[in-house]
Length: 256
Image (cartoon, rainbow, N blue to C red):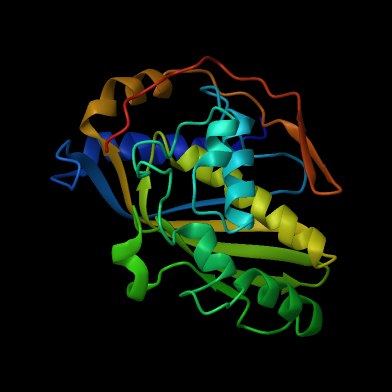
C-alpha cells in the first residue's frame, strides 16, 4: 500500500495522545503537545490526501488561491462556503496582514517574495536562498492570528524541486491534513512556474498538538482503514485528483 505519509501521520497522532505533554494554551481548551515532529512525502505519483477520514479538496484549493493572491479578507472562503477562517475575521471579514499578504507584499514594502522566488529558481538554481518567510514581527499585532506555517525553502536537484517547510504550531487533527495538501499544491505551482518537476517535501512541526476536545475524534480516526493515496495531474495550474478513496467523515471542534 503506497501511503507512507498517513502511516507517519497516524504514528504522530497516537504519540501525541499517549505521550504528549498536556499544556494550557491561548484557547483555554488545553492540548497534548509534542516537540519537533516531521512528515516527509513525495509527489512522484500520488497526492497526499489522508484516506482514513474524508478531506475536502475545495478547502485547500480555496486557501491556496487566497494565499497565492495575497488576499487578507475571507470573501473568497465565503464564496466557496469554506468556514475555516470565520472565527478570526472582523466584522468586515478582514484578517490583517496575514499569510498571503506577507508573501506578496512583505511588511507593506512591496516585497513580492513569490515573484523573487520564481526569478531566483530560474536564474540561479543552485542558490541556498530560495526562501519564503511569512513571520514578520513588525506586523504580528495587526494579524488576526500569527502564521502557523511560516517558512519555506526550496532546493533544486537536477530537474526536480524539493521543498522544506516549518510550522511553529500544528493542530494535528484538523489542520495538518489540509496543510500537507496545501504545501503539495504550492510545490506543484512553484515547480511548474520554474519549469521543474515537483519532488519531495519535508515538513517540520515545532509544536505538534491535539486539543483535549478532539480526543474522541482522534481515537476514532486511528481505528479507521487506510487506503492507497489518490492519483493526480497538474496541468495549466489545475490540480485534478482521481481515485480518492476514504474511510468516512470524522469531525471535531475547532479550538478558538
